[in-house]
Length: 240
Image 1 (spheres, one colour):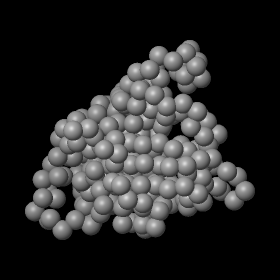
Image 2 (cartoon, one colour; image 1 turned 135 degrees about the vertical axis):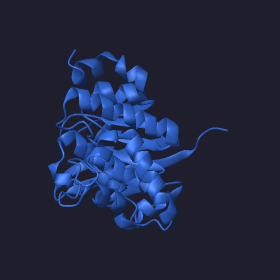
Image 3 (tube, one colour; image 1 turned 180 degrees about the horizontal axis):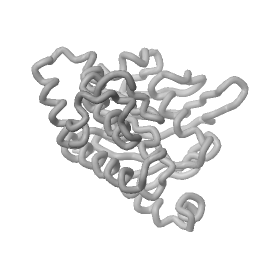
Image 4 (cartoon, helix red, strand yellow; image 1 turned 45 degrees about the vertical axis):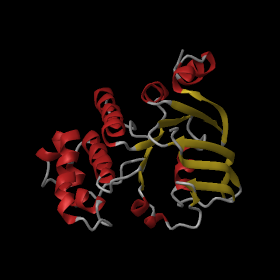
């Protein structure tokens, strides 16, 4: 049986005042996929994720999750529905411990007996967080904070995980590990992933499909492997 779309963005427009950030973009994510949105700074990548989450209002078009429109759904209700975002810049709670940050990720859950098991599952992906269990989030390195932000999102048991620039400001070795874990979460836990990323090479290597966003419009979409081998993409985004 073919996979069905877990997320559909249909002709979405969004603006910041008089500045049009999205000009009718459409994309879909099938259940079980990792899909990337690549593009330069200011292309509208992060705005697309914020429209999905209801943080930036959609002026025209529709966003559908599991077949139903979520335009009228409050952002804080989406994690209960299985849609969770790891925002750009991580945005952990710096004065709370690693443990407290992770528990907050399970804030809406009522299956308390399973929460400890899921903390251990997060530690299986990010062993360093177990070593920092009682340490304040603000004292972690940038890479550890990114791991904590992803771990906190996993505590909500998401069906669809939105990742906004997970490589931003991190050392190459840490970036490689973060992407390995994204692939593991997708394969082992069955979490569908929509990934916004400037590191086009790494993003497309981890994805099955990709979309190219330029000045608020989708200019290209294809299988990730074909995009990686596209000469225009290689010249514009891969420095070749």
